[in-house]
Image (cartoon, rainbow, N blue to C red; front, side):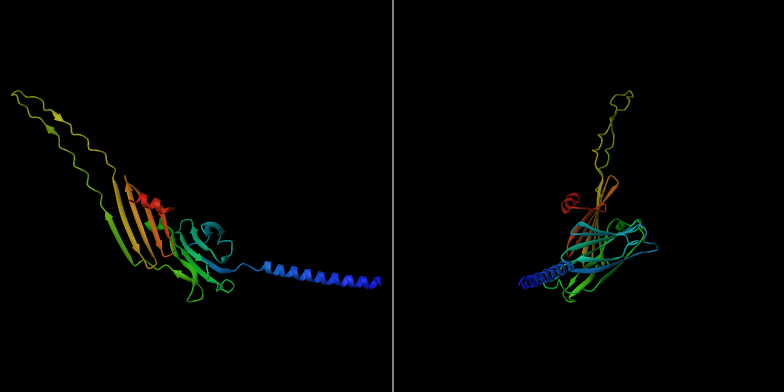
Amino acid sequence: MKKKVFKFISAENFNATVLLVLLFFSSSILFAQEIPVVNVTFKLKILNGDLKSSQITITKTDAPYIVIDPNKEGDAVDLPLGFEYSITFTKTGYNTKRMLVDTHVPENRERGDFERQISEVTLEKLSGKLEDNYVQMIGKIKYSMSKADFDFDKVPAAKEDKTKKIEKPPLPPNPKPITSSPKQSQPIPPVVNKPEPAPKTTGKNKVVKVISEDYKTITIITITIDGKDIIYKKEEYNWSTFFYKDGKRITGDTFTNETL
């Protein structure tokens, strides 16, 4: 009688153990499933140079995310869905380029397979031109409804260049000295009235340059104060607007107040 009870209890324990193991592995498999991602390969090329001191910086919703050394690390990155990423390509002595990757997809499309995206970026040596002081936007990878997958939206070259120059107002002429004439017959030394010094003015010049393209408008404002140039730039895209002062990001209010 005892042996039968023992066998019955053992069978019950065995079934419970099997059930727990199955539940454990099922939960482990579900937990181990990866977050949906899109794979992007960044192929950085340096014109007439190598990849030494080059860098690819990725930010996720304006927060630091990944920094890649193309000279040492791989160039493929898995970017989780549902975020916007900014990718900046830099190298000492070369121009800087930037692109955006928007991984938002329609509902019920998160679990599908996506085509691997490949983006080739070439950096050129700085030429000393005004445009070298700014980050060049090259395009955006985003989900295409017509393609039902991700696609690269390239920023086209500029088609129109309009320049409006505001000339510096002329300074008032200095008054001529007034000399009194003698009234007596005897020679009297002339008395010269010294002119009042002209009020000191601050020389200020403003030059506005607008470059219109298919997908963006660039406004470059150069303000010269006492011979010193301050360069402001506004980049207007379909998806956002960026403001710069001497190559550094500023707010829209600062841009507006300082370029009036």
